[in-house]
Length: 120
Image (cartoon, rainbow, N blue to C red; front, side, top):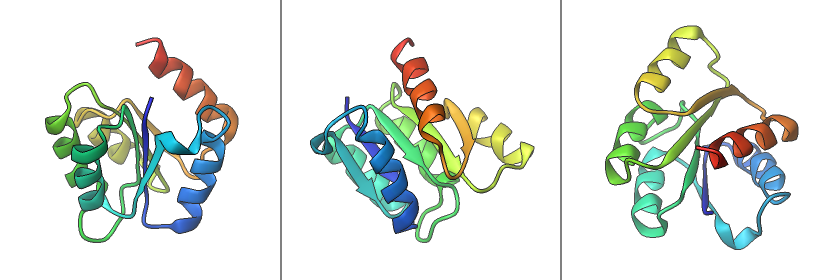
């Protein structure tokens, strides 16, 4: 499995990468600082799972999500955002995200999500 962690916050990326390292090695984790980088990285590295923030410069998560799904309709996108409003959750799920979870993600929740995605 390949993972792409997309967030404009270096700290948020670091926390998520650290948690992911429990389940995989660093060679399978890629990082992007905005939606545009995520699209480019998806074309290059073909990740299986993308962790995507919503509020980022250059291209936000709402714009990036359909582009990622167009590149790979089978890609699994997990939105990790401080925006926990119900309308944000409904919108990203309608755009094809598998999950919408609040930042910061805790390791137990990450484990549950990875197990759920592996069983799809």
